[in-house]
Length: 216
Image (tube, rainbow, N blue to C red; front, side, top):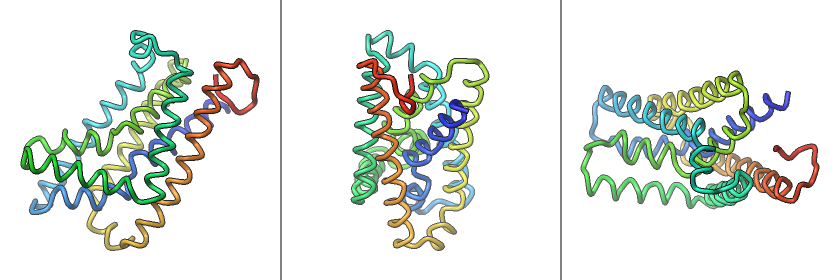
């Protein structure tokens, strides 16, 4: 049951940090002037690249941290603070502005070359928040079955982002600017709550405080 709750929380965190609704207007801006087939190709390639990036961090994140001498508790606290900051940005509409600036810089420098890899896959889809979330989630998955479930969670999250980009035009018309703003703020509130829980988990582990809600 605890593993299921962890996976559900992990999926929710990934959905918030990958931000499918927020990707819609940015993807449309990135691919302006492209045909439908070209947009589809960029969306699929970007989703695949971000999936493998997140998968690598989820499965090898502990080894990377150990090699750097960073404890999981320290990373949970730092990751929670980072996710909290992203959540606050979403609530106050700062995150989309930052992503749009990143997009404009990339287009200016590289034109449309390697668009799927940068900035679409990273840092727009697999950004610091999503990478932090996958490492934190991966640290709680101990058995082979847990890790397979984690792979499935990351795959489903990547698939949702892909579907949002493929249906970008339709979603943009349905939500409108008001709908996108409301949804982004709701997701931001959820992310800040999950971020606080990550910090609590890290602090209680360091202090060896027993609690029914904090993860090991």
